[in-house]
Image 1 (cartoon, rainbow, N blue to C red):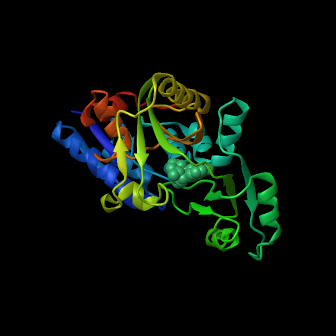
Image 2: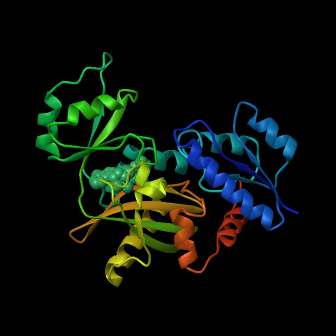
Length: 306
Ligand SMILES: Nc1ncnc2c1ncn2[C@@H]1O[C@H](COP(=O)(O)OP(=O)(O)O)[C@@H](O)[C@H]1O
Ligand SMILES: [Mg+2]
């Protein structure tokens, strides 16, 4: 019988979502007869792994520490097989600035951006409005460099840019991106395979935290996506190219905006949500792969030296 230690929770702002993912995975594995437990990472993580002695660690963490190479480094040190991407790929994908540089260098379209550094006394000079106007044009999107789940992502116009920037004082630096109107398309990659795509139509102003996780927000999920063959192939190929460029393993989900025939890659997620209602399981189900089959694929793919 296989023993699986599921890492869930953690220290990031996406802790609650991670616990949901972990619980979904736990339920599916137990039903299939695995010996599985959920473990919240803390200072004793290596000790806990050594005492449970799992065949595989299933990483269900999201955000900082779990998605950015930190926990992957600990798992490599513990010499235990683990799922999803390895140290370097996780680090690159979680850092929106580094990954955008990599996309641009490889002719993947991503929204134009500026890096904005807060100064030590947390004052914001009005000059930023002119810089944005000149280099990007309004509206813009401001976002942390390494966060997820749309946490602290704001769409800003000239009038509320400074006010919104103040909400991000907790970060030393952030990205200001040109706002891309249009459709929201996401693509799942599994190993080297293009698993499929989904379109999200939020009722809210954009695909924010509520739109992602609250059923009350009533975001529409459209699958199969209504794209012609050429566009669908194009977006799936870009997602696979990004997955390979970053050096990802296992499953990833790439987030796009589609406007005037062009796909803009916002980011590639190395730890996409895996609750039964999440997008990757939904894409997998449409392609004929059940939730447990998806989880078992990910477990079979686990290794060290990722
Ligand atoms: N440049 C942009 N133009 C338009 N919408 C954006 C832009 N950047 C982010 N968004 C919106 O915010 C959401 C979250 O942004 P994303 O960059 O994917 O960060 P996160 O890691 O928080 O998911 C996107 O799904 C999209 O709806
Ligand atoms: Mg995203």
